[in-house]
Image 1 (cartoon, rainbow, N blue to C red):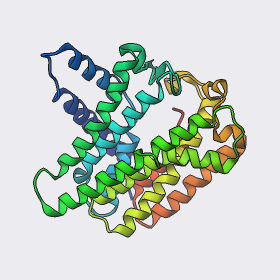
Image 2 (image 1 turned 135 degrees about the horizontal axis):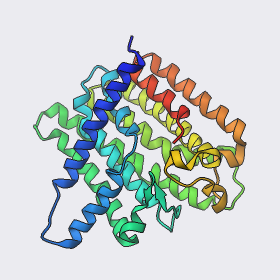
Image 3 (image 1 turned 90 degrees about the horizontal axis):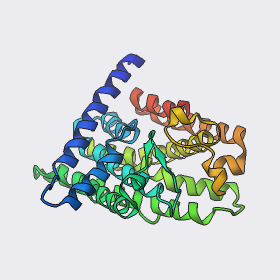
Length: 303
């Protein structure tokens, strides 16, 4: 049995490796012959290297280990999901979407570099994510090529029109409306749950899991992602801005539909906790203490 201290050491070790990997990925693209490209790379780094818990990447690595693979096999996938997450943050913060001016305690990308460069930085990070994931098969191993191709497909679906992008479209459409609970939860599962589901599915795929376990972990991740988004909704109402590194109360100000707006604080909190309890029960079948710990951290966080 792993103690929490051992899990924390595992987390800290991989966060350092992930940060170095992300920094290397950006610096490896450096082209100082043109100032515009240098500025674009700086905008990309502003968000992806500006902190973060690396939860999505850790879920990817832990999923690979849970199915009997090596964490290192899933490392390119872990980097890729962090790049996609960073791209989504840059675009979410834009005036046309959430219009936020603070992220992880710093001015958002578009305030520092301008809207046009921020849009391009998000675009470039999404492209770099797929390039990084595709590079996992560079050794030419036929089996690995098949796994990587499947992981690419999983990520593409998760961020597309029936996944994260579709959830964002629903989010915008529901502003100022009176949606019911199922519609809001569907929006939030797409907006956040699809990517977390992809993290676990990509980790399991690169870890060599059979399709049944990939599907199981994908569903676990989607439910965990919904719990994560509901917790975000709760923090937007009652969180501490100094701990969160971003403004609170913004959902109500912009008339956004959220779990808290349609369910109330108490019911939303209970829903998030029940979702996590279910995911922990499902993960227990795999015996992964790291995944269980990560799931518990979803609703216990203050940022």
